[in-house]
Amino acid sequence: MACNKDIIIYEFSTNITKKQCPPYLCFTLKIHMLQNLSISQHHSFPKMKTLRLVFVAQFFLSLQLQAQRYNIPTRFYESPVPPAPNYNNENNWSALPHKKDMGDLVPQGCSDNQATAAVDVFYIHPTLYTKKPKTIYKWNHDINDPKLNRTIDKLATKYQATTFNAAGRLYVPRYREAHFSVFLTEHLDDKKAALDVAYSDVEAAFNYYLENYNQGRPFIIASHSQGTIHAVRLLKYKIIGTPLQQQLVVAYLPGMAVPKDSLPGLPVCLEPNSIGCFTSWGTYKRGHIPASYNEGLARAVCVNPISWIFEDSLTYEDNTNASTHSNPTSGKSNITAISHVDNQFVRKLGSYTPKEMHRGAVLKPFGKVYPQISDAQVFGGLLWITKPKFPGAFLYQTSNFHSGDINLFYIDIRENAQLRASTFVQQNPTLLENIENKR
Image 1: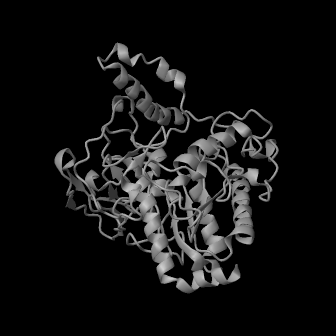
Image 2: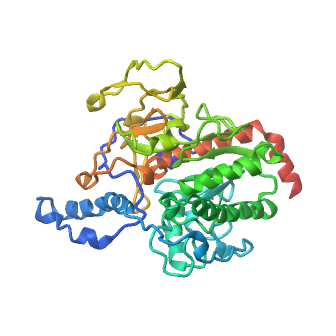
Image 3: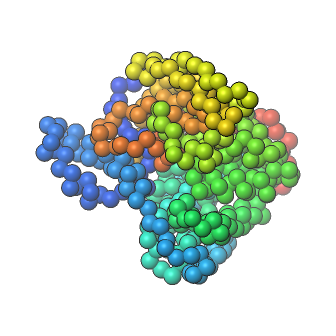
């Protein structure tokens, strides 16, 4: 098991014969839909395999269900804004290192190192406020909603934030996240207003963390999806160019396009042990280019989350001649791809990372690690993977693996965060000495 050793980077086994499972997290699962599938009536699977197939298929149906989001029909100014959280109240944190919560969970063979970690992790969760609002608050999540808070705890914190509890002490604030409608509305002022409310909480939580918990310790910023929007803003206006930047180990910013020039003063992480930098990616099926590509992904940084090597797959050129590049994959994935030229940005293939190098995904139910189920290759700001083989794969038809940006590469991220934290501590011994002296 990958987690049985302190830090294991790129020591790969090719003898794994375990069953393969789907590579991403279920956010909006509807169990009753699966109960109506009657899969066993159409396939001659043994009873246990049928149950496994139905359970595994939950992940794939859930992502398709996510596409059916509710779009708020009213304007932002037509409904009140929910009250701001007080971060002195520990109920307004999904995870804190000194209390028992979902942030303490670990997969089989792994350990929770928060009690002894020299580094902190400030994690900002993705959008889980997607359904039709049932209260007077429409555009932003009311953090006094216990049902949605439980969803955040059991999904985002459990399946994403825990990736980092081997590298550092985990801080996960609740915040008035913007409703998914901000990604659907044509009214940009409504989008901005709702995201501004959400960010104001993230900044307030970070300020509280600094004043009450940090004590000068190194920290990691981690996020996903909407959380990445807020993390980028936090980095840009609160960290980069300030004394806090000297404490920044790394920023993990998956699930949202982050252009290379969007964080001036903070470089992209080039190597697995690079520190004081940021890394980002967005996951899609091999060969797929989303319709929204030119809305940000065309200029996005994409770091391979298995190799952790950054190869700039977007080159600015004046000519418009496409050239052929060989894709060094193996087996069925062996293809030849053309570099596409759009608006003078040439999209190129990065180095191929085979699934044998994949350290492991963590799926539902939480606990078991599934290694070697995904390959990875960067193409023009996108992370391409070959669709993993797993029971129930026929139920999954979309090419977007957004929900699996983190837990598909759970162990890869976990070990990499440990490596970067260890590297930072080794290179900044006086910082830790100053912390000890303050105690």
